[in-house]
Image (cartoon, rainbow, N blue to C red):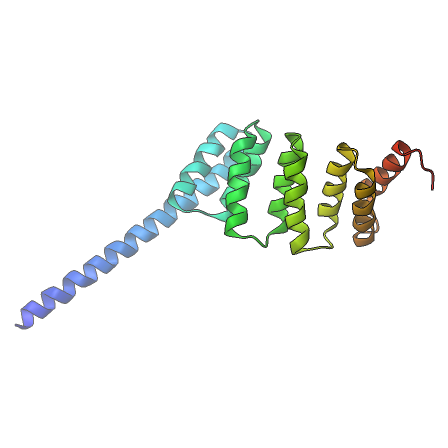
Length: 182
């Protein structure tokens, strides 16, 4: 009877160690692929970096790796993949304003100003004083010739960040387009 219990507990311990070993192994593989992706990206081997990041994400959905991969997708003319990944990141961590800003920039590159304005509205609902979100909103508004709204966002961006040179220059550009000289 004692041997029966020993064999039962021994099997249970072996099963636990196997599952921990598998977890350690997958974590190790994830880390290897993530760091290989980072190194490949730094060396300019974008195709290999994409493969490494995608393999890492198959093992574990990691916000940081998704961020790296979305940046590469945005730069390599794969904006649809970047948008899908950024939307997934927003669903994972909806309080990260920076993710909204990156997505807004991708929308700007696609000339999708309505989605850009919408996503920046979401970012501003999280942090209404984010200077970059106001600046990007103004950029979209200026592009679609909504100058009054653009000026409102630029004023808020400059109020939030006094030395925001790009916002100051854009405000001058808007006033010049309106032929108003304050």
